[in-house]
Length: 231
Ligand SMILES: N[C@@H](CCC(=O)N[C@@H](CS)C(=O)NCC(=O)O)C(=O)O
Image 1 (cartoon, helix red, strand yellow):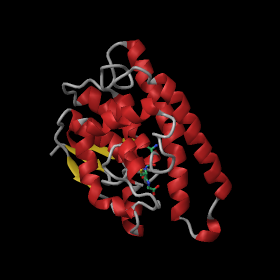
Image 2 (spheres, rainbow, N blue to C red; image 1 turned 120 degrees about the vertical axis):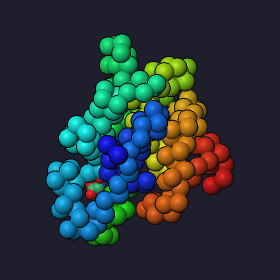
Image 3 (tube, rainbow, N blue to C red; image 1 turned 180 degrees about the horizontal axis):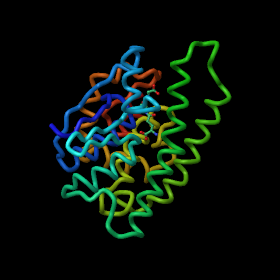
Image 4 (tube, rainbow, N blue to C red; image 1 turned 90 degrees about the vertical axis):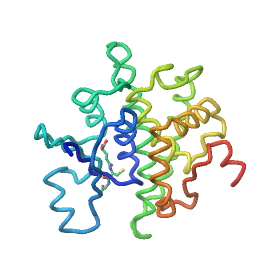
């Protein structure tokens, strides 16, 4: 098989790339590197210098692509399918890229801070940093709520890079700060993303690992509103 995706079923940034692959039914071989193993971690640096997943290896083109956004741009250009992930229209492409950056920098990064803190030894924890991250998530929800008003997906009816990015970021962030609490547009958008077959498949593959997420509130396949009532 020509494409290999180094990823993990629980990894939110891997989900971004998996959604793009499943969206276009692009054939690939998933590889799960064991980054806890020092020698495997060191070896993996020859693929991803920062030792991050996802990474895409395209053997036919002799290319290694890291950074989830770039992986999606690469797939869209070199392995296109029926869903165009970066719109051909420059205005729409700009909007897709901007929402991708907003989701990565203000949702994804803040949720990683909270989850990462749980993985630290007690004495190395950073409660102030976690508080800032939680505030950052609330700010991000507020601006996304406005931006998504009346839209089915981030760009309207078209599914794009922006949605690949928003789906896992919002899915995991929802376990830290409940989206349904004051952000109805965003909660409905997350529900639509979770129902999109490409993300539903990604989540179904992740579900057996959900118990490993180091948060008191474990992820669930219930839509955001339903889960708030169940908790
Ligand atoms: N900016 C990177 C972030 C990737 C990232 O943070 N991946 C996490 C998993 S979700 C990771 O590889 N963590 C392993 C580690 O840091 O050791 C991207 O967009 O691909």
